[in-house]
Image (cartoon, rainbow, N blue to C red; front, side, top):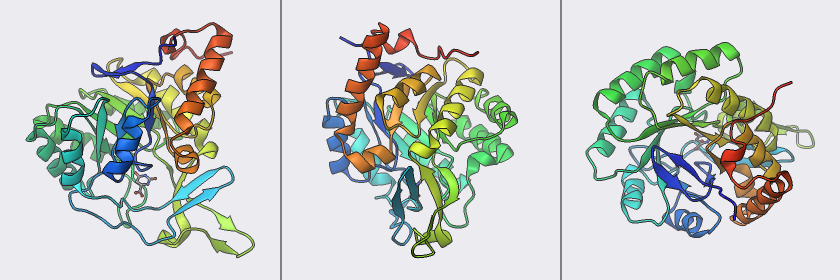
Length: 309
Ligand code: DOR
């Protein structure tokens, strides 16, 4: 009896929940499990690179008391594997995530999508913090502008971008001034907070192997950063560009907060990794309980309606 729907570029999602790209989506088995769960709205693929990649050496994902740190390094089965998957019929929408190792790679990946029969949603990951020697594209404003300019000279299909977190209001102004020039379907915010470091005091050591222990932070500790990014982007982006809220969701209240900040859909990463696919049923129950208590029946009743004081 609750309306938990959202839509991106006219693609209807019966429920608001997605996986955060990277979690539970590297294999077709994992993607199938997501799409078969009744509480999941759609699935995002692991970011595909042109060629299959093994990723960084293990240990490369570590669960912390308040979240996670990862330096996976884009392990994935390669572009052909994921486009084949999303070209099959699925009862729910899919989002094909792609991540070039360079701007040239991004162009090649999107060219292949443009030339394919795929008509669904694509998301260009401009924010992977973990490929050794490669910066996060979306922190380079001129580079992002130039890349999107060349992308939209040939790419005519629905396209969104995955953004890293920003921390300065001027940077929100700058990135949205760029994004608003293009017919983007959505932005997905946030990727992990890049290059955090966890120290295990007992062993006097880092906890993941790649990059001397530096890695992307996710989970509960990033919730305020994620909410700030969803809110700041929603306040500045064209209405046609939806915001997918990603980051720090552990409870139904966290989901509710993302929606209040303006999220159209909400993705689960660290908590999905920790809890498994049952997280979606629990979050749905918790969200619906809060909505019922407040007398809301649809996400639209409160989406973006955060109060200020
Ligand atoms: O935290 C992340 N880890 N974000 C990405 O975009 C890629 C992923 C990885 O594979 O390292």
